[in-house]
Image (cartoon, rainbow, N blue to C red; front, side, top):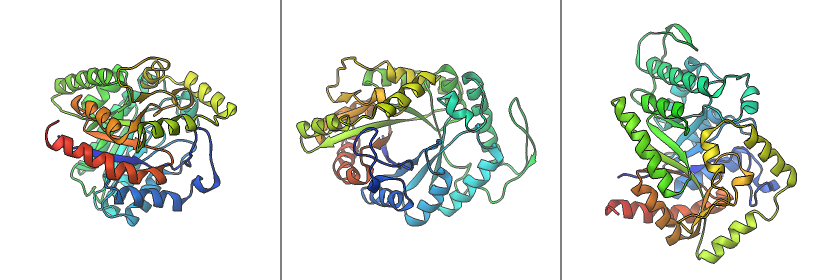
Length: 353
């Protein structure tokens, strides 16, 4: 199995503690440039650029990063409820050319109805995934065809054409996450990579098996990716000291906002992660300390390089071939992860571990 590794681009600002922000880690184009350059130098394949009310525009940032790097791909998060598929098809095709074919798209169907409403999106959970299926279908059609007509439940497209077509044949790869039956159906029908948040290995194995079966029923195969945090250091004790220090300055107001977001969310994947709070897990490196204070990617692996690599190998055995890592602060931790964790995992995969 060929493994691919991505780093996270904190376009909302970075931090050394949960809920903490320091002036030198606030969002700036220079800081994201630094994170991207260090990720490329450390051997990462891609950088994830998130979407949301607190983030800089992901597609614009990707166009900028493409000019400052030579091998790093950009995984751009986009929300079907905030942009028509034909408009996204054109901007993605443009950035695909600007990057020499180094663009992928993370289709973000939703999570918090209150947050989605900021962009005028008021569709309920199930209808959002139905819209996502249509959205991806229109993207594929516009990227590949000479003229597209589509009359669906959500989009009515008349004689749409696109030039230039994306540099990548058929368009950039599509990533999609979600744990509901609607999400799995959407991924099985149209995505290239099914994304998961970090859960215990046995849960991940069950999910990859379930989604693989759904894809086979559609005559397709999918790759599997995982987003997870790493708190890794030279020794296990040093890593755990860092993990506990990350929770040492949680601001009550921030914690209250996180709780409100979690309570408002209709995300099945978020519910699965939140259900892990307070449980004991077979893997001693698996940590849920951040889960009460984060709305999405909140689980982590904590330990020495060897301990973290051992845990990640279990996920590879479960079928995961792509990892998107966060490790705080991103510009300061990427070198260690890139130089020690990635080669060890690639080596293990090469010998069939």
